[in-house]
Length: 108
Length: 158
Image (cartoon, rainbow over all chains, first blue to last red):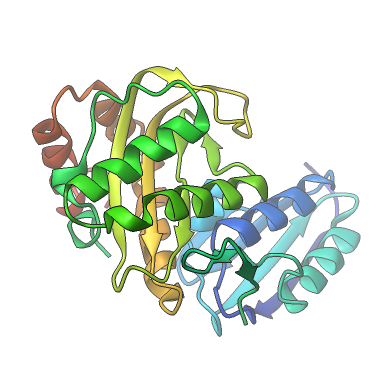
């Protein structure tokens, strides 16, 4: 796909890192754009619209990842994705059931 | 992290009989209980925790694979197992395909990095179609153990 290239480097801030739920949220957001979205970490460069690929990064809290968008809406895509990562993936927490009570609390 | 670090071989199931999401989850948790990896008294609570996680979005990640998981305070280390369903189970996967291959993970709430490392390992290996095919074709727990061992020795992914 031809078009502009936009990139940004972000730090993973949520305590759980890029586990499955944030990977979904990222891929879902990336899929809303026509541009190709890639994530670069160390020597890995992967498809940012694939949950499975995002999980291969094993990006823990504090690690830095480069986001690269290529296409007509790359600028908007990268802006949205940077804000998603920097916000710590709101709503990404997974419930933890307490023993026997059936109640759950959100992770820190 | 290697498969041998978290997959409890005594709990591997190649003949998952369940035909619904909740039944599969219960069958795999039950298998971990029988292997002595989870406490029997926690079975129902763990099943409900895994189901609760599924409500946030299916862990069926496509290509016939699902990674049902939860954090649970009753475990002190990452506990996992593998299940194979010959017929496949509707898991509301991203791509709509039935799931044949299950990796279940129960992790201590305070060890997010271990969970992340396990997901990293599983997802890396699953990108290799030979690895997936070998697992789905496995007919005994020993077969699966052998495929996982080969994966741990980097025979699929360099």
